[in-house]
Amino acid sequence: MPEMPDVEGFRAVLAEHGAGRRVERVEVADAGVLRDVSARRLERSLRGRRLGDPERHGKWLITGTDGPALLMHFGMTGELHWAGPGQERHRHDRVVFAVDGGELRFRDMRKLQGITLAERPDGISRVLAGLGPDAAGIGRADFGGMLGGGRRAVKAALIDQSVIAGLGNLLADEILWRARIHPRRPAGDLEPADRARVHGQLRRVLRAAIPAGRVLDRARWLTGSRDADGAQCPRCGATLARDRVAGRGTVWCPHCQPV
Image (cartoon, rainbow, N blue to C red; front, side, top):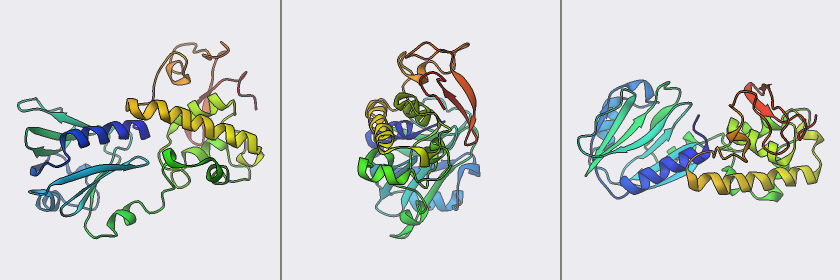
């Protein structure tokens, strides 16, 4: 599933191949990825418009034009690809934005999220309403309070987009493994030092993953080991534990992350 680093990679694609170029045409092969906009309106609103510099908030990719803003959310399986002239299209290329020199292709197998437009000046804020601050920009002082208290599992707080925008399942597991915090541990039980440690690992993980445009699967990362048969902790060698936490498949080390 695309997480914040993946969306940053898609932002780089759009910045390199779209920013400053005019949209020559929009082809909607499958309107199932459109949200609150028809294929006809999308084409009419964007054709001839010049794409601006793209930005990212959490898992949303946003680019202004000299008209409405274009917003993309990649859901579980979405991607943004650049294709040069004559390159064959993929069967899951749902929307194609043709610009000078090639095509920007929104590809998505499961179509759980998609593309929308923000027509009015407050439209972007309306689409993003309810999201917490972007995870990459949260300071330590603010972070501690965001996790909240009570018996809610710390992982549930990390992946709640209304609390922190951008963290997904892989990132949350990686951060908590590095911080040696069990994913089911109640957020209210975390000491200030625990919260500071989680924040520090969040910053380290994002500093490595965002430039790479993906959640890294290095040998010394939990992500690099979690899917192997009989997966072992890269730090201590213990067999990794698996269960569902906050409704998501979760992996942790029972030795490094005791309850």
